[in-house]
Amino acid sequence: MRHHSPTELHRATCRPRSIGWCAALVLLILCFSIITTSAWAVSVRIKGKVVDGDGNPVMDVAVTLTGNRIKGKPLTDSTGKKGLFTFIVDTGSFEILLEKEGYIPQIIKLDARESGIKQVNIVLESLEPVALPAADGTALPVGLEGLAGEDAGQLKKGVKALDNGDTEGALAIFEALAQSAPDKAEPHFYLGMTKAEMGNHEQAAACFRQAVEINPGLGQAQFNLARSLVELEDHDGAAAAFDQAVASGAMDGAHCYQLAANIYINRNDYARIAHYLEKYCQLKPGEAEMLFRLGSAYFNEGEIDKAVTSLESAVAADPGMVGAHYQLGLAYLNQGMTEQAVNSFKAVVEKAPDSPLAAEAGNWVTTLQ
Image (cartoon, rainbow, N blue to C red; front, side):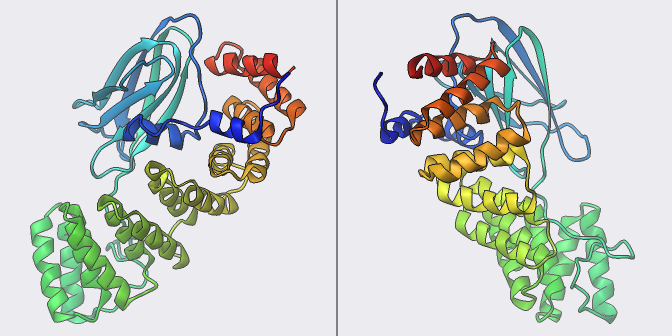
């Protein structure tokens, strides 16, 4: 039996870089699982419904489907007024990328091994700016209490206008306040929220930066700045702003780190992906999916020891996660640990014998034994 060198095995798992941005993004965020086609094919209808955080249908969402049963270009669709999309494909393993301006892109992995209908329900998170409610119901973030008298009354009037969808009225109020109280963070913060609501993220980012300059600990402004910079494709700036939002103590650190990791997916920057997933897992230890993604990022970065540790934790947290077992088998092979690799590949076959991934794992078992 010929033994593969770690370099050979590592290269064998790498994805081509020419498959297109959408396909690469989907494959990367799904932790670079390797899948193959099986010898038979049965049709399955994949039906999806996309809603927002309030349960309302989201239309005009671009939907991209990739998978081991799809040859050539990925399949695409878009949601209608009811937020629905559908694909008819051969059974297999798939990844669904959903994108719409103003919403955080989302990737869904789907194992559709049986014929019939596979229903998928997705909630898209809005990129609308975030403000925390004050005790009196006015949307004032923590730390924004600097205005007084008539200015404070105007601020509340502007916030009410913004909440009611009157962006032009809110814009006029906040612009006037920024002139009359330039050394206060509130007018700049809400001016940024209004600009972001209007889709002008370049000016929104400038306003949030001004608010942060006045009040460096204003985590909501840092978070909203990061979101606007994501829209402007300033990835490094967005990641830094997410870091500052966490440092302020006012925002959910795990959520910020997950968003920061996501921005580096389409850049194939495995080191930065791993950096932020490490931080996520420190705050929320034991989540199998995130440990799986972290292990795959380590693997593609060439840090095999760390990959093994993370992937072992992933399968310990969720023994049924066949993708993690498979990736762990590849990591063991890179370390020359043939017996452990065989056991991991056998676990894939035992836990999901009908899956396309099991066929690939079975091939490895036959080759290595």
